Length: 109
Length: 113
Image (cartoon, rainbow over all chains, first blue to last red; front, side, top):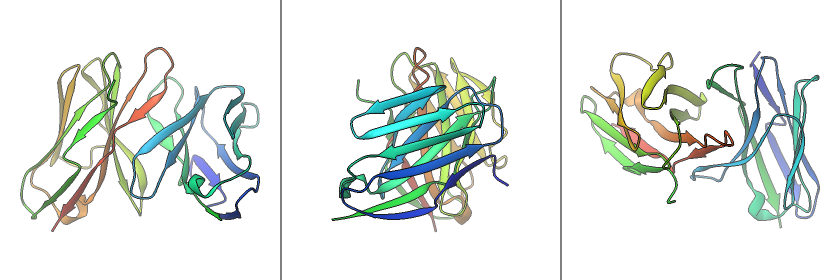
């Protein structure tokens, strides 16, 4: 069992749909990051959060420390949101990041 | 700031050759990471530095891999000799000391024939 697990692995949605990607972790962490990677492209950090909720445009990230669970939501999805979304967390007290396997999102026009 | 800068963006080499990947972190960032990404294994941490000092290199696959950070603005990852199984995208990243946010370079795509 991976220490950081994401679901679903693949997701296809129609433009405009509300999307949720989940991340569960089993190790102690100090914060959780959501990353976005477009096909053949670099990696961009979307959020870093250690509690509660953050919002940036159409993206919302939440984390529940007690349940060791985080979600990334995309409202009014658009084809340009098509990418791989990765959650990552450093083990507590270190900068050794553990990465989820990623969720491949495809938004159809 | 221009972001984390990596070079080369693409490298194709033959087995046995030496490969050197370069990274310039964002000025003022205190942590620098080298990651490798493959289809099979996803993102893997190879090594990370804090204030130019290597902190953890347990992810470096074997002695063929070495990394240096001679100063705060430059790091190299060297593979000698290279093997086909080293083919991957190598990412460098640095962290903002105030926020902890991770910033990645565009990656160096290495193909070893």
